[in-house]
Length: 126
Image 1 (cartoon, rainbow, N blue to C red):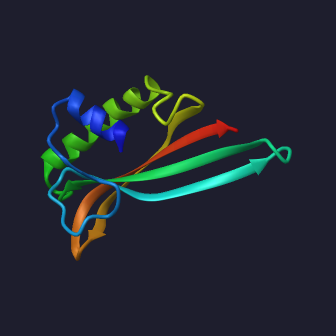
Image 2: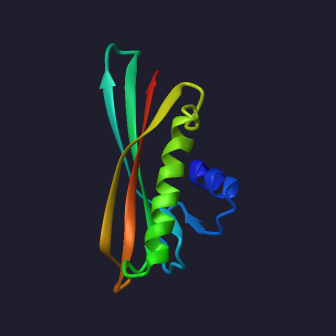
Image 3: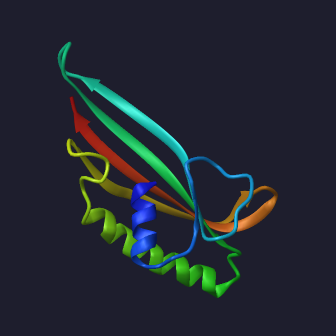
């Protein structure tokens, strides 16, 4: 969440940020939706780890033009922010944004909200 927190601070965006799905949301809200890791061993002592973190962004109702505009501006700027901070996951890790998927009717606690899933991928060798 450090990447999201730092980017939000840099653009003075007031938002909610959580490391897991919150019980309530007041958009814009960001939370870690999932983390997956693939381990690729080369030898007994060496392996590569590829971690994917999906951050869910809740923007508000899709029919609200402000929510759509906020999404566009945030995602464009955040993708550049990630590209300019490739070591944000650690000194031995490269991080990239690898996917963004919008869902205009994401179900959150029975409410339909405009949402984006932003997938970050980190690659490290140990």
